[in-house]
Length: 145
Image (cartoon, rainbow, N blue to C red; front, side, top):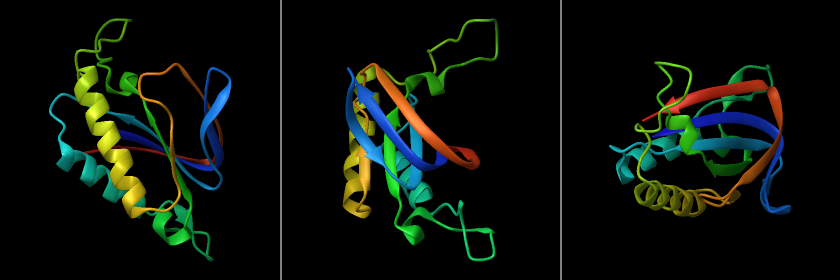
């Protein structure tokens, strides 16, 4: 499972012109599910998302986690993040999970995130989404489980 984590001042997701998920300070995470992923992969990614130290402390060092600052978590499914781009000039999506598995594990990740963290929003799995964000830093990390 891959999560492209971006520290944001604000982020929102729109579907058909309507905002379906939004957060203020926190993390926007684009999530890709791969065929070998399991609920354990989702649990491990979520643990990292909630505890990865990407927010500045009083000395300006990245020492605080999302849980520490109480920020928002915006999860957006993005199967293209799982693409194989090693060869040619067109991505191959054979490395992405089938849609049913992708949706099952994304939904599981979202449910668990809401159980463990108070401020969680999301896009809609499989929808044509427009993602708006103000990247803070910019700070972006690719997490893999």
